[in-house]
Image 1: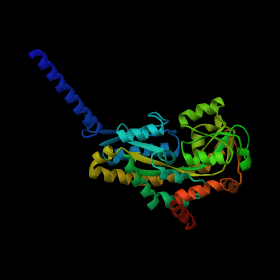
Image 2: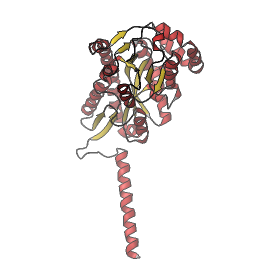
Image 3: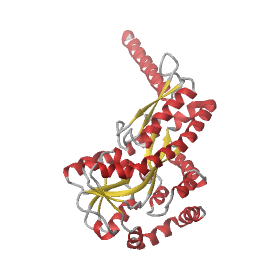
Image 4: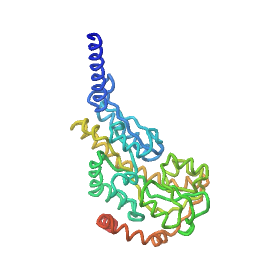
Length: 338
């Protein structure tokens, strides 16, 4: 009995030690490597060749340099660490340090985020900068603390356009019946269904195979995303609708942020502010070139009248104004004040 008791005691001690070690590693309270470098994981679901992917690499490089090698950011692209909802939950649990997620996906966690996807609410890059680099953007970043996330920054994805493999879209009537992949966001879904499309919400990792197999006719994304994710291989029609301006929010595990400490928090904040500007510059440069490159890859670009889309969704606008009236007014005011 005495031998058994000692064995049990020893096992309990070992388990306690292991659990303590796991807790320390999870909270990043000691260096992950013997040389003193702490490694953070940063994930997105899109390509590393887009403006966001390239800017993630630049961010990782800058953090390593500015912290003198104390922090190393490992970047994961193309959904290597899961779909966007998976990476959000990873940040909440502390298994992922930084995630880059579309504003639409965050609407599943905080309903007010869905208002940012209202079609034609933002109509210029100047207005977009006033919104997302100003007080409104900061308010949305601050709201993320309510769902166990640290709002770290906002980057640009761009104005969204429609592609399909069935027919050219020259008017809103040409959208009728098209099976369109949308993001898992109620504003997106309602908009496309209102104008006659068969809107199907799903993650991008599931959408591309569905486009390849013909289960879907098309999708909607910024031109640079369409280009860097090889959509021209599955869709030959591009309608430049610019129906919504899309951003990605950079979110961080609150535990990771807290464990940085004041000195490194200041460095991380400064690097993010600088990258938020340079990412937008790169995004706009790439967007200006994207449509021509897509045409070179065999896509035909059309330019339907945007007002037709707005008129078709008039009933939805009444509903959206009832729900998000104050925010819509604030965002529209920044557009008229350009």
